Amino acid sequence: MEKANSLAQDAQLQMLRYQLNPHFLFNSMNSIRALIDEDETKAREMITELSEFLRYSLDSKDYSNVPLKNEIEAIQHYFAIQKKRYEDKLEVTYDINPQAGDYPVLSFLIHPLVENAVKYGMRTSPMPLTIHLKAKTSEGVLTIEVCNTGKWVESAQQEKQMYASTGTGLDNVRRRLENAFPYRHRFEVFEKEGKVHVQLEIRGYAGEEHEKAV
Amino acid sequence: MKKPFKALIIDDERLARKDMISLLSVHENITVCGEADDVPSAVKAIEKLNPDVIFLDIQMPGDSTDVDAHIIFVTAYDEYAIRAFEVNALDYLLKPVNPDRLAKALEKLEFQEQDLPERIRKLNYDDRLFLMVGRHFKFLKVDTILGVSAAGDYSEVLTSDGNKGLTHKSMKEWEARLPAQYFIRVHRSSGSTAQPSSTWNS
Figure 1 (cartoon, rainbow over the protein chains, first blue to last red):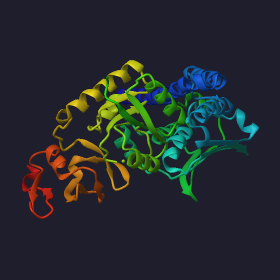
Figure 2: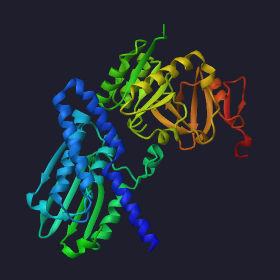
Figure 3: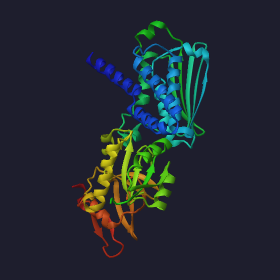
Figure 4: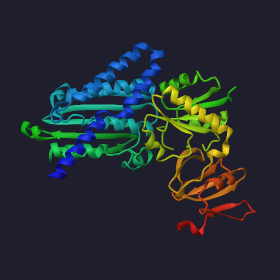
């Protein structure tokens, strides 16, 4: 029981880490400071986007049952901020099927995937780093794909050494999927022709199960 | 009259470089001589411009110049996380950089420049050095260094993970900084090669 509690606490801390990544926050502030002199409009936009993103992060308390469209919206704010930071070094494209928007997912489930795409992509991709986010539903199956140019960085080992990070981004995603959608999901990462693909599939859903899923 | 310094700014984000340039602009003795946004252009700029001080974002893609310049890390990461793996930096600044904190770092630069021997301290086995080996920036853990051999004014480093390459450090500098019992000098006359001594496990 105690162990379960501590696991739940760990998961919650992990969530917080994703929601309020200080590294992302401070880098965004840094860009805004530089933009104030150069392009006030952009600086204002960036503050709006950052606020929206932070509000979403702080508000998503019930994180077991969130319509995908809310998640996507938060991701769009996130990318809008990153795009202003990295300028022509980052290209982001979307292919979101509107029907997929109501599919219930775990909050901040996809976020670590897009964060990784930026983090590792910036290190391994020729510039510009190109990220493509795809979501569709077909016969009760939700498919999400995050694809970025660059190489798959095997294990979080390097990350741990370089940045003293906990490096458990994907592990955390896997754990949450297993808890919430046991035997009903597929999670795959592969590299093909200079691109990293992270694919996530969730098959059918029953409301009740979502209630208990964390 | 403060001593003039040439500064190079290495960061992959243009806006971050811009912010740093603007912060430095109030310090009259600092001239920003160049900018670089990736490792190859950083290496080129260092070789061409020979800066006195480098402001470096640690995030810069993976691989490093054992330059004669002072290195000031500028990053949004927690200071202690960085300290843990890097010892030969002059200072660490956190983004967004606080102008007062930058002024302190620059004071340090001035002070260190006057008193060079102060900054040379002995390394421990678990220290990491930020070096340019060959044409790459690398973080080398001291205990992975298998050997150092003289190559003119420079030296060649060989590490246990197979890295090998020229660094700008002279044998004398290596001797001054590596743990005392780590290296012995052999062939003192012919090209002086340093190798781990037999006491290396003790």
